Length: 140
Image 1 (spheres, helix red, strand yellow):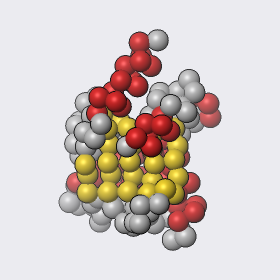
Image 2 (tube, one colour; image 1 turned 120 degrees about the horizontal axis):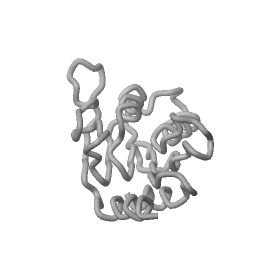
Image 3 (cartoon, helix red, strand yellow; image 1 turned 180 degrees about the horizontal axis):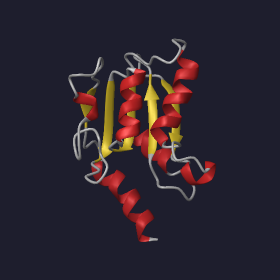
Image 4 (cartoon, one colour; image 1 turned 135 degrees about the vertical axis):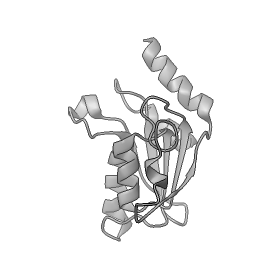
């Protein structure tokens, strides 16, 4: 999570969310920060950018089986769906997001038993550090 927090600080003027993807042996495959404003792209969330970059280097096409996605904020519906489709093994996140969170808060996309893949989820890891980045951003 500390690496994801570090990535979040590189978001420039964007919402400070960072994401890191690790392979099954714990090696970092990719890290990213939100870039929606910089890229003028509504899909440029940290998770999406990190998953894309990880898939490009992982060597198994688009599948990230056994990999771990670590993100500072609970993923939204789009990002949760992308993690399921990429078949990540675990999602670890920091702060809960009661307004848009799709990994247990508002709804729970990743645990829907109708889907063909359900990653393990570990929420609330260093939540204060993650929330403080967001509070500082919105305080400006």
